[in-house]
Length: 275
DNA sequence: CCGCGGGCCTGAGAGC
DNA sequence: TGCTCTCAGGCCCGCG
Image (cartoon, rainbow, N blue to C red; front, side, top):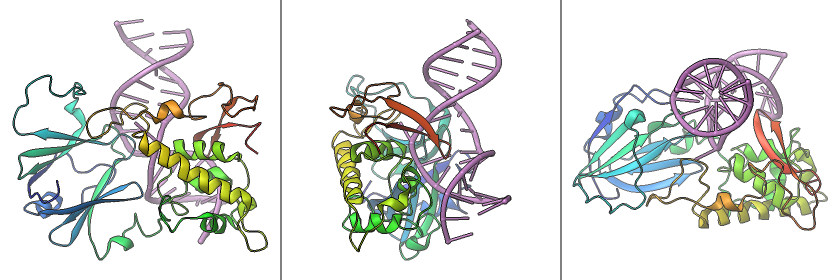
């Protein structure tokens, strides 16, 4: 998409989770895409007029790349039958490619802002640090935990603390760190001026699990695909997520994976080695 | 300000 | 086969 002009945008409904902004399609028409980026779970498209297109996939959003020219059948090893029922937005590009946004549950959204205002946008104003960036370390994690009345699961899911962890990677990081999802967050706060050993362990576990998951192409529970259509395979490396009843994989732990509900969402953990 | 529960949507899978 | 129920990768909002 980089360096390519947007010839036309077609919205096939009024909005997704939120209504599209005023004159959304018209404002994108004729713009050239200067850069593509990401912050937390938001996709960012820099346009040549200083505007930024913000997009979020929600739970079930995806993009499909369609070439103008018909490719001989069989060339796309991974191509699947395509349900166009939930194709909500189509970007027509000057290089003959169409980018189709599909989202059955419509929890995703698209919005427009400017580069100057991006950090004040409602979705960005309160975002915490990138988990793999230099601004996130054991110190920052310990600081965020100080005085928090809630548990570790909720803290890690809170995008204001660290931005980009979801349910899977929170469960996996807590297991790797040997910390219970029910543990009070405040017990990770600094003691006598230094981050606790627990905060260091959790920070390292977060980085490890994200780095490994990225290298594995992410986790394909049902929809997720890499850009070439292949499947992520980190789901095969899950130690707790969606493994209720399975033996704990941490030797020599003899526990088993349990499921519980925290703030309405499933948590998977081993109570014998996560304390 | 904080934390919690409910809500937004559709579809897949289990159980009957 | 088909019905009903539960659950799902995320995030926002209103309430207390």
